[in-house]
Amino acid sequence: MKIGNLNIEGTAALAPMAGVSDRAFREICFDYGAAFAVTEMVSSKALTMQDKKSKELLVISEKEHPCAAQIFGDDPEIMAKAAKKAGTFSPDFIDINMGCPAPKIAGNGGGSALLKNPELISKIVREVRIATELPLTVKIRIGWDQDSINCTEVAKICEAEGADAITVHGRTKSQMYAPPVNYEMIKAVKEAVKIPVIGNGDITDIESAERMLNETGCDFLMVGRGALGNPWIFRKLNAYFSDGAVLSDPTVEERMEQMLAHIRKLVEYKGEYIGMREARKHSAWYIKGMRGAASFRQEIGKLEHIEELEYLADKIVKKCR
Ligand SMILES: Cc1cc2nc3c(=O)[nH]c(=O)nc-3n(C[C@H](O)[C@H](O)[C@H](O)COP(=O)(O)O)c2cc1C
Image (cartoon, rainbow, N blue to C red; front, side, top):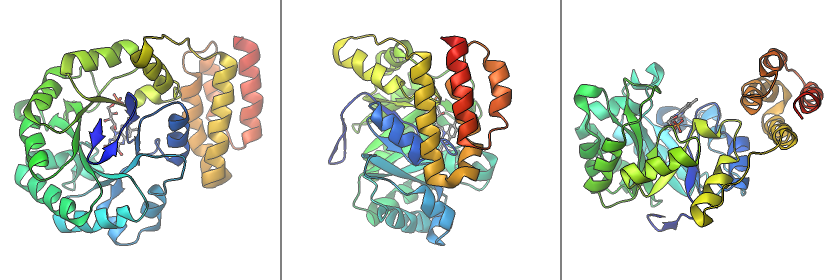
C-alpha cells in the first residue's frame, strides 16, 4: 500500500490507542511486524500551546517507523498549526482523528463529533493539507449514529481535500466499541474512493483479519484491542498472508518474557512510578486466559516495582507450564 509517497509493507498496522499505544508498545509491535503505528491522539489546542505532555506523546524513536502523529480538534486553523508542529517530531505522516467517541473529545466538537459536520471536515482537511507536506490520513467511524451513517460522503470529502488514505472503524459513534462491525459500510467506502482504505474493528486473529479483507476489499488492516497483551498478532498475520503459515501461540515462558521486556521499557521511558502503574493493565492483558489469571490479576493490581512483576512472572510460568 502507498500512503502518499510512503511505501507501506506488510499486513496490519497498530491502531492509535490513548493510554496504550505509547512508544514502548509501538516499538514492541514493530518488533513483531506491525506495518506502521499511530501515536496516541494529541490535542491540537494543547500542542499549539506548547503543552509538555502533548509533546511527550509525539516522541517517536528510531525504531518505530513508519509512524503517524495523530491530532484531534475542531478548529481548522489550530489543526493546521498543530499538524505543522507535529511534523517537527519526525512522524512519517499525519493522521486526523475523526472517530473518538469519548465525551471529553466529541463533547468539545472533535473526534467523532466532526462526522456531524461535513463542511467543517472539508475545511479541516484542506487547512491541514496546506500546512504539511507529509502524507495525510484520516481515521473515521462510519457515522455518528445508525440514522446518520455518512462514511462514504466523509471519505470522498477527505479524498477531495487531499487525504492520502482513510482508516474506517466499522462502527458508529453511538456503538462505541460494541459488536458488530459493519463490513458493508467499509466496503462502500472502498468503492467510493481511489485512495487506500484501511479496515479497522475487531480484528483479533487470522479469521477476523481474513473476514475484514474479504468482506470489505480494503487495502490494509489496522489492529487495536487485538494487540493488547498480544503483539504476536502482527507476526501471525504477516506469516499467514505472506505464505499461508499458521504460527503457533507463544508459550507461557515467551509471554512472560515479553511482558517483562515491555514493562522494563515502560519503566525506562516513563520512570518507575508511572511505568509500574501503567504496567498493571498491560500485565493483566498478557496473562489473560491463563490458568489462575484471576488471582494473579489481584497481585498485578498492586504492582509497585519491576521485581514484584519478575517474581510473579516466575510464579505464573511454574503454575502454567
Ligand atoms: C483504549 C483505547 C484507546 C483508543 N484511543 C484512540 C485514539 O487515541 N485515537 C483513535 O483514533 N482511536 C482510538 N481508539 C480506537 C482504536 O484506534 C480502534 O479504532 C478501535 O479500538 C477499534 O479497533 P479494534 O477493534 O481493533 O480495537 C482507542 C481504542 C481504545 C480501546
